Length: 288
Image 1 (cartoon, rainbow, N blue to C red):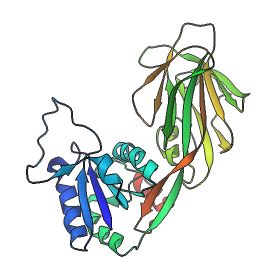
Image 2: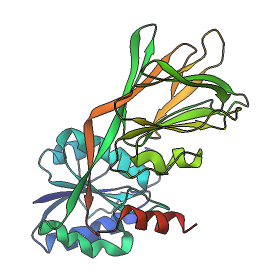
Image 3: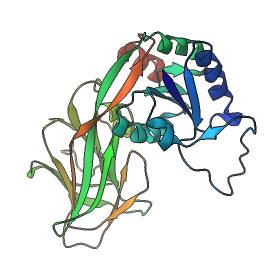
């Protein structure tokens, strides 16, 4: 068995958590490789330990059985994007704040020994293919595990938005934006925008307006087969920004169609502890 250890070096300083995990796994006879989830900034002032060999993630994933990420949800989202084409299950170790997608906390690294004995389950999480069409041509495409978010940016104004399901209008409103989320992403920005909490293994699409200037603009939970479309009302000069899973923003123009549909790809998440989703909700968000 081979496990790729993928630490966010800005969270896992000195790669200490990754090295501890490597010891646990290698003591069980598991082959390991340490890889970074992204290229380091040239002026990031971050020194990696010289005695720790760091390999290329893309090359190591080709022969991996499990990918273990160390960081917050953003790190897991970033690394999962690389793992999905290889159908490799991902296990998250939380070194951030909330960490809804993480299975383990930093003090639970000893549980990684269960990987060697195959004592784990795998959950399949649906994803959303997000595209932007401009005058009939596709100008953007990305796949989301959490969400696709359309916002007005930092300018103090609102966007006039139309939201559709299979090109039938669901809602039209003015506001700061809209979140199109998967069940996995229902506990992220969608929740903060007033959207519902949805079990992560469900298969739905959540539409949550952000700061809508209308009492009629409410969140919707749609069937996973729906194609959700969003556009800024044509004819105006206001532009917006699309960000998929918190990635780099793409500028959208009035009349552009942002479309989200269920992807054929899925993310596989490793479950080791047996903790239920409801336990995680109470632990991470606190009891009401």
